[in-house]
Image (cartoon, rainbow, N blue to C red; front, side):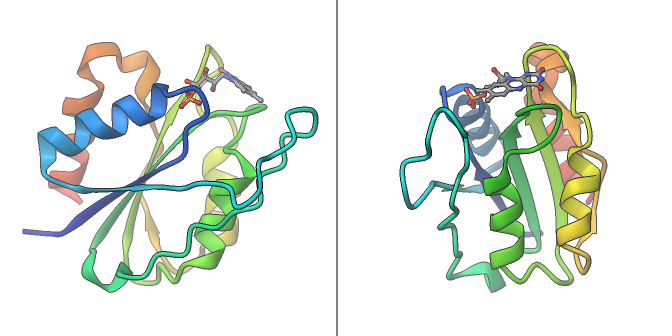
Length: 141
Ligand SMILES: Cc1cc2nc3c(=O)[nH]c(=O)nc-3n(C[C@H](O)[C@H](O)[C@H](O)COP(=O)(O)O)c2cc1C
């Protein structure tokens, strides 16, 4: 079985709950991507920490995040840049208010060229089917 890590960033807890529910369902490990410094709410700049130590243990990285201004938060890009994901399968998953994934796929693949990206799953629109759809994407990856 392929080893899966769910790395998530959350601000108000919605993405965290989805990450925890998905981990429970799939047996994946969980990793919280957190800012080193408290980010400024007026500028919403996140300086990433998020260096994974045991990345070699994983084949699939599910990256979960809220949509901010029609794309993924900068901290997600920092996470992708700081970690060597070459040869891994990355499954992006977003939560959002209403806009959907926006340009997050383009932003993520631009900074992480050596991973194999699956299409970003728009979890919010899937409502109570979200965990099942993510679990199926993990199975198929
Ligand atoms: C700074 C900021 C920008 C946001 N921009 C968008 C957006 O462009 N489109 C959208 O649908 N939702 C947007 N949202 C809503 C969040 O994506 C949504 O509430 C998300 O589920 C929150 O996840 P969290 O609780 O894990 O932080 C934004 C929220 C914040 C705080």
